[in-house]
Image (tube, rainbow, N blue to C red; front, side, top):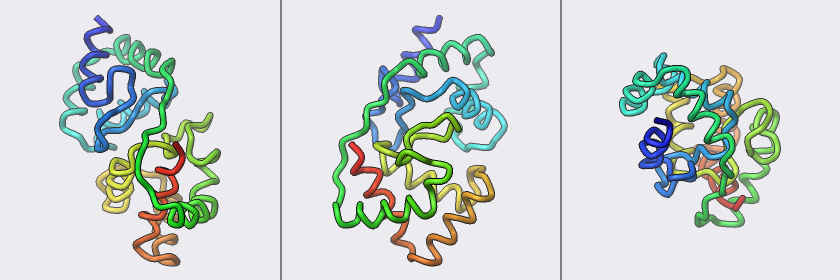
Length: 170
């Protein structure tokens, strides 16, 4: 039953999809389309996680749809995190220049079905960005180009500055 699957998801992502563990993303409020896209990525090795891969392979389409519908209806709660306001200001400038075209509205989920940035756990986001750069996770080529250009123009600390900005959006 769906309740049992939600309980399983909740062990890592929180009972309502708002993760309490900084290494796990909050998935509350994720659109049904993005949720299903994410599951397909785990099924087809576009995202690496043995636990998620095993889990998604146990689900049929009806179960996946049920989970997607459940999490789409949940309210995303930005995670309270420490941040440096000076770094957050610099991070906002970087976001506006390099990220805003796809992750508009400060990186909140959009009709374009990109994931949460604003208020998402920054340890998780940092790992995801590194996975993109290390080609451990598929990303649109333009995103890789922009991340590399940002690092080239603003140094390795630029990703950290972005994390302070996203953490500030509580």
